[in-house]
Amino acid sequence: MTNTYIRNATWAPTGERFDLRLAPGHSQVVPELGGLTICDAEIRPAGEMSIPARARIIDAEGKLILPALFDLHAKVEIEGRSKRESVTRTGQAAVQGGVWGMLVQPTAGFMFDNSAALDSFREAVGQRSAAEMVPAGCISLGMKGEQQAPYNTLAARGIRILSDAGERPGNLLMLHRAMKYVAELGLTLAIRGDVPSITANTCLHPGTTSYKLGLHGTPACAEEIGIEIIIRLAQDAGCKLHIQTVSTAEGVEIIRRAKAAGSQITAEVALHHLLYTHEDVGDYDTNYKTLPPLRDKADTEALLAGVKDGTIDCIVSDHTPCTDFAKKQDFPSAPQGMCVLDHFLPTLYTRLVKPGKLSWAELVRACCTAPCTIALPDVIDPAEPEGMPLLLFDPEATTEVSEASLPCGTCNTPLLGQILSGSVTLPLQ
Image (cartoon, rainbow, N blue to C red; front, side, top):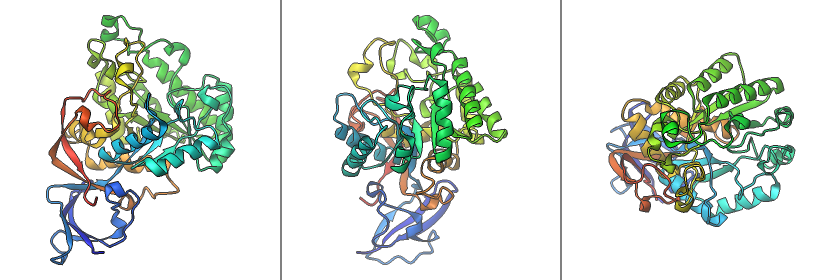
């Protein structure tokens, strides 16, 4: 085996240029992303490394190197697909989108509330997935919100985060007791702010679009009250709390105040809540139906500001593949969610980094180091992003979003037919 050299590389978070020498047998954490980690490499300033004539050389001129992303919120199950095919397709989508690993939310088909379900899923991932998939255990049995899952068993099987995905347990007494229990086990609860009795049978942000289309609105105050409730419960229980898919400006302010007061909380925003508003729904376009719903422009701006100042720790995909048949139903009946993983990094670059709304350093923090801090503190040292799997990104390339370029197997994305800036390159396949 010979050494591989990458020359003229630019480290995206800082803009520094360097050459790397990768020794034979370097880490194969994520083979599909080249298994690259800077800790395996000899590093010299660009142009200062002596490279043998017969060495394998990757010229990274004009390309960027950055840590591959970790997505803290994704769903794997694809309706009509087998579990193993769902795992395979989602793994392929993640690698194409620059994501080396993800926290997988429980679903009806992947109900992580018992050891057998965890074993079956991990076996499928080990055999079928090109990306790492970390399951989030259920908060309640069957995600029904009434009876606690066996937390000690889940913790013993390596579970570190518990979530009922998009559902907030309606039984607050059970939730409070659950928080006390998981606090003793050192686990984190991941919950979305919601008051189910207010948001039942709603599907769109209340505003001009909902009035025009005659659809019941989902009040922003329901999410904000829900965030206040779970924060207060977690404070009393001494529980680590991760707030999922924040979508409102006031939600950001509530979290900012709670963090300033010393609460053990982290928070995330879905990429689509930074890019779109309820006005994009147009004439009942179900590809823009999400949970929580898309909000106002002022909310997107406040959410982005929250990412930049660290109030919102993570940007997530909230990847939710849905079949064409399901999305072609009437708006209230169609499922919520977008498929995002397939083009995650090019979308981040095109819509946020390239226009100057987010720096590369901020993107790496929100999409790599912070998610790893929350999900994988015992596996990867988030203070050493240079030790994480890496990827090459070509900012001058383009990526066309077409049915053929969606390995996840579904087309429920408003990006379909668009051309994005940038492309993930896989240098050592």
